[in-house]
Image (cartoon, rainbow, N blue to C red; front, side, top):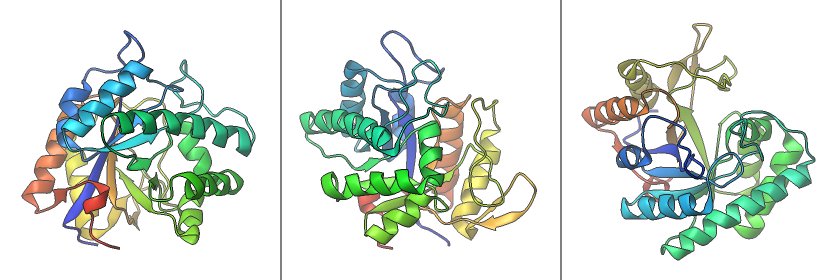
Length: 259
């Protein structure tokens, strides 16, 4: 694989009113990323926080993305909720529209849409849901990238439809042998240097070690780490340092080499 430029994305704006989710503030993490997935109010976020986070992303030259989730503030969008594909896509439309308007307010456009948590995982395996989601994006946001896993139904359907799609590598999540991430609601504090080594290895060799100890191929255009992972600032610092040391630049999606 041996990439020389890669996008780095992180979830942002995941508070609500006076409530802040984590130990590290977005103002610190924004310096290490090239794309921001901004919470849209269902799993976290509120209008003032959305506005502030979009403004901050624009000020730092970071791509603005919508991060829609299940309507689940209490569970932070990491619990699967029942609903028809049509209902769930309507929820996504509602949330994407909110961030799109804040992006316009601050003189930019929506770079990408990345569903959050359990909604992301449901799209990955639900072809009916993914098909309806991609058809919505083709109709309303034809130039806006979808972020997803390379092994997902979302990726397969988006590619077939000719829609811009970005595959992710998850720095702070474990991998199963089928290339999916091991979903968890709670991640303990991780070793930043070990994560940085994992990321550099994936960029240089296109390989990742799974939870069973096997090595599998992995293709991606963006590296994701989560702002609510304990020690996220240390992870971001180590990861960007090691990428730079190995001649790998972090750039927004629009600046990635043509694939």
